[in-house]
Length: 86
Image (tube, rainbow, N blue to C red):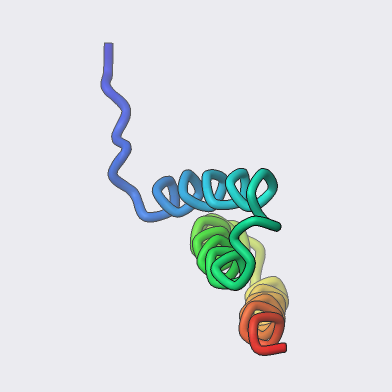
């Protein structure tokens, strides 16, 4: 049987984003200030995990879809940064 490769950035980021999100759901109120930092790290990991497969999808669709991808990615990054700085 073929062994699956677990060595990819997307898979690692997706795994850690889920772990961090679960911890924040359970213990978010207890951590206080650390919760905001963990939330940002989780969002960054989720963004990385989703951005690469989304880019692969957009490149097969055409120029308009690549532009939509870049706009959506910029909005997501801006939301992560400015949501953290509030």
